[in-house]
Image 1: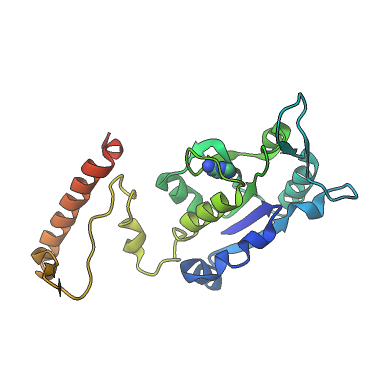
Image 2: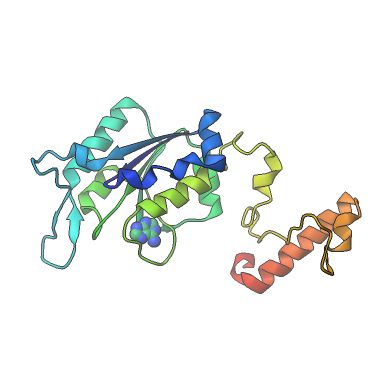
Length: 224
Ligand code: ADE
């Protein structure tokens, strides 16, 4: 999967993709990340990318010109499955969306800033608008990092143990059950006996039960 990220702060991503599974995904050739500096595509001398809002009001608006030029150029080079704009008024991100996105070949992610982007840029190019939650960030970069992380780890072949991603929280609308590792007894705090029993069936039933208990208690909305 190729992810083209459009940003006015390319350095934000300098180290983000260099760790752990995100790094391995690239080494394995499963993910390719391209960061584009939107300023490079501004047609004016000052290389500005924003301007005052028509009709008045506080906050700057990102110009359509550099966004249109860059996305048009990218679209001439390859076909994109989605052109995503990260924005607090987008569809709320969930695991199901990440699953779907992880199966795509090429996506573009546009990071917004200031008040947001000129509406016409959205009409012209954006196929999907995503919010990471009901709060407002200073820009779309952190949201893009979160989306990319959640999607890349799901790309088939990225995580070795195929069942690992399937047992994540939310994957079946349930939170994940409690997990333990050695020692089995830590200062009297013991690991549930069933997990040491070696009985796979009993362990599966226990985990399902615990997942349901935890979800009922913490996130009953997931069960509706
Ligand atoms: N940009 C600013 N706030 C955001 C949010 N909550 N989700 C996605 N992009 C954003």
